[in-house]
Length: 124
Image (tube, rainbow, N blue to C red; front, side, top):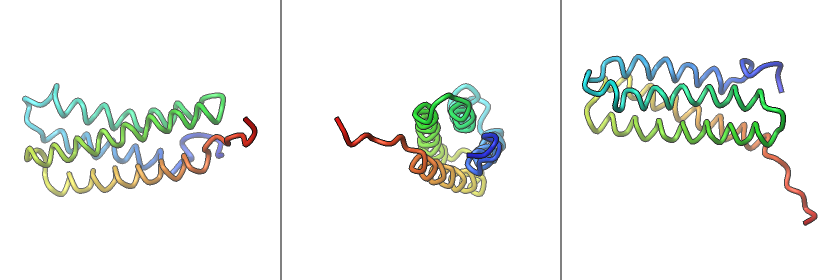
């Protein structure tokens, strides 16, 4: 592991995703400010935040758990992007960019989780 969560590619990509989501949702209808706009922003912020919080925890198991939370938020955001598309919110190019970044972050989280998965004891 590096010296900081800031050394993680997945953390950097999740920050990029959050910036994309904020830019995307800034063009959503004002009536959605407390609806899907808020939900998407909170989910995107949660991804990077949970990566950082997990990294700062004491055990590998806790880190793994927080990466799981981040992956859950990533899935939540992916669903919200699909909903935004179906509602016609946001520019197609911005939606595609956010969706692509979300997929990248999800894959990176999965790989990181696989690499640190707590070892299971073979003895009951």
